[in-house]
Length: 430
Image (cartoon, rainbow, N blue to C red; front, side, top):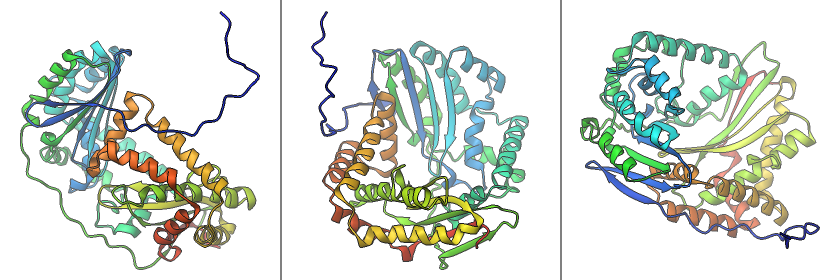
């Protein structure tokens, strides 16, 4: 069959388009649990995510939330750690438990019929964990070793302590983990934390091959009493205590490099300026063609890599710039980073530079929505902040698409004032 494609001509360029967040199904499970569904029955694989709104924000002792989450797969009343691992592997599934400041997350990916077989095991792990002492000690020992290795590196130290300057050490976003924290945790601490977990407020996300049999099996899982038991709310109020000092230095005498982190509080997804701030951050240091990469890496050769990014959290967000340089060029690098931030506020970017950054952001945006698994992740991104994906993502796209050089300049002036920047140097300051 003759093709009508002329392979001597390049395809015509077309503007990137976003047609709105795709439709999805919401299904009630049990009494109050909502399940969000993206169907793709052409695939035999299904991904199940469970978002439980209890995390390190709610813990009273360091490592309680993360270790409790990790221990769900280490033994239940019906199966020990080996039996659980063997069942997961035998059925070709991938199971992961994790935690953040506000959530414990469980994710499992499996072929449709295999996930049906695994749901009773998952129910057992969630409803009747045993928190075996030997498994906990192994996990803590491994994590302590990883922590010790990271804490010998200047950037490891910098990332661990920097949030405290923005939020204060008494705030969950700013607490500094210490090596001794790994020795203090007990199984009783995990049991105590488990009894505070808000299973009844969980959200379920399903993507891939979904039918009525899967929904019925999940409904049976959610019928477990843990998903209807109401727990006392432990979500405390914490004051942000930002450091008055803006320059911070931690000496590491033997270091040949210095880690540098710039940062300041910024607005989150709920703010109308957030899309423009994301675009401004992309221009500044959010991709390989950014100004910081061109200036600090390519033009001046001070570092192998430098980047900026925005950490978005439900109650506060911040932007950071991170890099490592030779100890003797630390002061030069700090000065040049300040110059690049100031330059964005003094002179508007060119249309070419703006369009390049915009297309990079659009490309990442569209890739992040390519398929049911990714769409499920996008729902989980906005739900903690109470945002509606149909409105948020269209608004985000439209604001980035309409952004002008003047918009970027005004956004930088408004949100990235160099005088408000905290600067941390770990290593040698010369």
